[in-house]
Length: 464
Image (cartoon, rainbow, N blue to C red):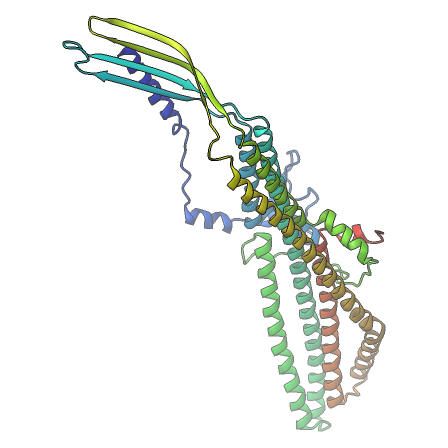
């Protein structure tokens, strides 16, 4: 009975170790909201006296505004979605640790008591057995290879999410800059119209302008006011979208770098054959599909290994006896062997072979879809490039000449209201269209980079 008591105590201790280290981490929604509300760009500045820490580059400075590359760095550091997605890497690394571990031995305790085993006596028996099944040849290697493929898959998934986020941030940064530029054009147009309004009112007071001309200009002025309010609304919408991608509170003002060449046309020399080679090497979701196939390979390898008949072994102890008879202690060795009569894992192997073929076809489909997306993005880039060149070569010179003539006419007081309103409307519309064309060109650039998995300056001029 003493051995039995010690066995029960040992089991209780082993069971207690399973829950002794758990610590609950409850979510407090209000604290989460307060933490998000406290996020500021100022917190990303390097702290003096400390060494380099992971995050945005040390040269990050708000004094000159945030560039597109700095915005990407901020988003990769602060965006809650990408921070949560990166935690999947820890899950995959835990799977690799589990794959390398040996199975635990199994302890079996048995106590038997037979009353009236003889006419006047009872007998009891106590058995202790310890058995362990070693891994089959190649089993741990296959599990570890599967776990490593899972880690590489997760890394590729994280890279894919980060690359998509970077492209979206660059597009949002350009969209906000374009909205600010539209607002600047609208305000400049209003200032010009205010000069003409004052001039025309003075002429009306002198009897040199009709009421019809004044009303026509007033209506055009109100239309420009309405347009300015619309553009301001679009600018606020673009700022909110950028803040969302950066992981900043909605009301935080993100200053943009005030360079005038943010949307300036910049040609890229690209070759379609080289683009397809780049997507195979660099596109993250293609790497995800490839690692998913590798996992299927290792699953099938493991299924073939697990069809090998296997065994368990370990020491055994038995104690028998009864009152007046004494005790008999027996110490030996236990061994059990699997007899493969009805199951050689054929069903699992058949299933995994079909799953592997499916994953191979899915990889082919992913590459096919990636090629289509790259070629569509490249076609769109070429179309936007032709449109930008048309504006630069034909429309921009005419706009600049029209502005010079309008300024000269206003300066000397030779203003025809109808001609002025018509010319201003065309000039403003053309400038907005040119700005939209520049924005769409750079969005096409970012879409192509997203489809390729690489920046275009890295691909430019590359051969096959």
